[in-house]
Image (cartoon, rainbow, N blue to C red; front, side, top):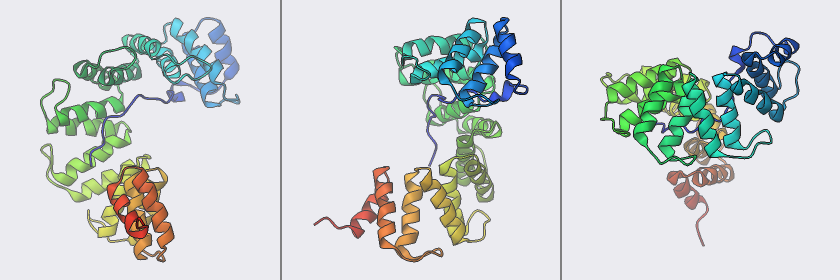
Amino acid sequence: MKVRLACLLLLLLSAARVNGDDVEAYRKACDGGQALSCYNLGVLYSRGEGGLTADPAKAAELFAKACDGGEADGCSNLGIMVSLGDGGLAQDPAKAETLFRKACDGGAANGCSNLGVMYLQGMGGLAADPAKAVEFFAKACDGGSALSCHNLGVLYSEGRGGLTVDLAKAVELYRKACDGGWAPGCHNLGNSYANGEGGLTANPAKAAELYRKACDGGWAGGCQLLGLLYANGKGGLTADPMKAVELFRKACDSNLAAGCENLGNSYAKGEDGLTADPAKAAELYDKACKGGDQRGCAELKKLRPTP
């Protein structure tokens, strides 16, 4: 199963650009007109770090000041807050689009990335334009946005946005996304190794390694697929039913329907070190079914026949 396109990057940028947490030094520099310090202080307020209580409204104020001072990442973060209606701001997709464009023009890769999503989905008053989305994803990927490398890889794999299907290019982009820390990119690269696509020789062990990386990076789909490999003793792994259950549970807890369905199977059959528990199985099948997993729906009907 391929991971589809990621949506708007609805998380504020990390504090990676913050050197230390000297709040008063940032405050003084910001008051003196240093836009980067306003941005850094905004990050600290948004995350409740540096001894500060999280204050989205104050963060928005500081990102606006940073943006006005020419700090592109401030524009990007303010655009995210406007798109969400966060920090006491009115939700305004059109204004968010303007801020993302300003951020992108100023060199902020996340601004380009979000602008690409808006063009792809026709948001913020923009007409849907997949070709324009490709342009912005490419710019963002080149600028270091791992998410955009992944999105561009998906578009190459599907031949969208005026692109010719190119699985080798998709693999290259998934690898770049994965190397950049974007877990869904690891997932899709793992699938490419599992299926021998994009010029790769099928390599189940490499696929397992990448699914593990995706799972460790917080991507439930990687946990689910790694669980299946442990359950069946594939991908160079020794069969380990208990490990499989652990991974299915992790996937289900992250609301991945397929993980709930597989965990339900283990409870229904009393396998993988679990005591048979039809009630628990039904609960998990129900969660899987509500999440869109048709096999979960089918198994639920077997346990709860319709009168």
